Length: 292
Image 1: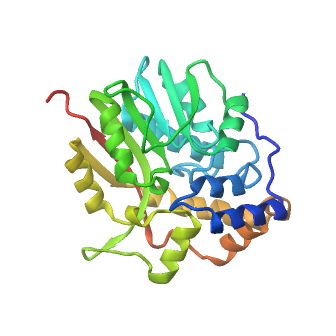
Image 2: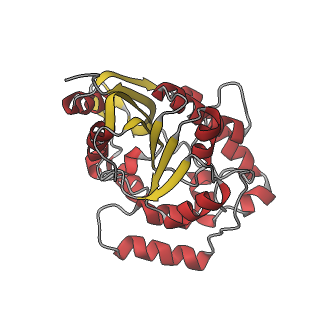
Image 3: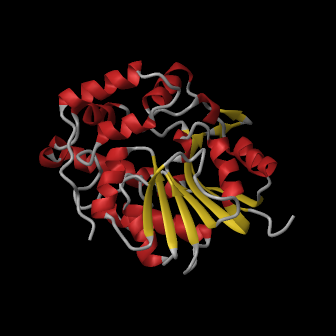
């Protein structure tokens, strides 16, 4: 049964992690961002989901978070007996959900953040799930060995997203499908809204590589160039962001609930207005050709 671990982020450890983020070599250290967050900063105390939630018909965070996983798994076409890769598995809640509702024969949950994997192996264990420390851009699997690849609110971190998409194509069997829940910049009048200096700083804070800063049009082109068919990208923004922001505003208004969040996160949420104002929230699906 899933339960929330006691992992916390003290101000001292937070400063240490931020220092490592500033001074550690490398273009993208998303793992440090998630070490900084820990389980203490998850939106709810009864689960360790981190996704924004799919809020159609609910105001309960866990229900919304599980609905998001269900949406992704259904879009991927996961069936009983499939072999599945989840790239960027977080604390593993989503994998336990997929394992117990979709019944794959094997689910490889990939992550680079040791603390999240440690939590997942204890609190979200299941006979069909294997938690793997590995990179989404260099998947440790044979070509043509899996039926489905999924990724939930993680691909924008991958350095690069295009490399991940190529790796996904390589490991998928002919006819296999990919399903991604992702964040991209908005497109307006044919141009990508990057947000200027503010957008650059926000992407640095979230460890989003510059190479991933493109909108839906380029996203679909990349999928096609790699060889994917049946490419479909749908905006689900209206069922995600308003509900999540309403939930977080209610949480921050509760002194007890707000106190468990790190002060930096509380300040960011209280003063940023809508932090997703320049973003689109999308469901991406595509298929590897059955032959050729």
